[in-house]
Length: 280
Image (cartoon, rainbow, N blue to C red):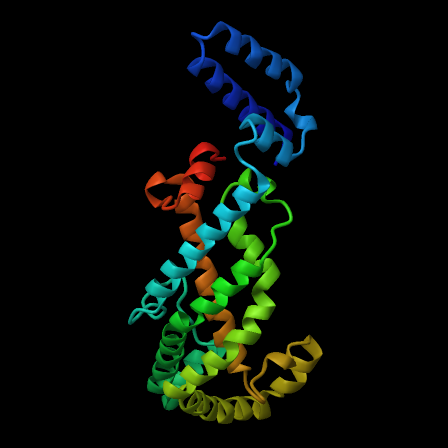
């Protein structure tokens, strides 16, 4: 947070407090004294700004608790929304597309008679993610419980969804390891491997023919893009797992923003106390 924002927040809180207590002369004098003491909030840490300007009401512990509650609410809403039929397939923000390198070859694959296979492949991936999402809720919640914020006060003074961003940064790889088996299970249930192999079979001959005629692989090697050519195919488990996790985090972030800015979504005493008093 920049110095101007610190000064604005601190001054606004003091001004509001002065207005509310304007009929109490002694209290007003105290507030003026506080203002003189902290007239340079740019020299203060985020924790000092928050705790001082709220009279110690908002401690780091309380802020952390409120953020964790907000994240858990976000997880609940995310998996509920994404776990619905079409939760991934029909939502452009989280829809899982045809993976590269097949996406670059889609026109050729469809022209070779693989259009229906592509459609089934995409649908199977999105269905697998939707069916896996609700099963990940407990894993996400456990990770939230174990998480330790480095500076909750700093995050409170940021815009957007800083708790979700912090959560994603510090837990993503561990979450990925725990969630991958769930994704693989649902991939099998939804025949993702069957459709993936079907698309690959249609794509490979066309690519090999094109490569033979145009020396495409030689050019690709020189250009440094050979690794993107579907020789062994994409790591489809990792691809779907990454998209599933990203989709859940996206929805958690949206929920966090709503909780921080809309009192109607502040469903616990801690959230009301923290986000109700201090909105960036």
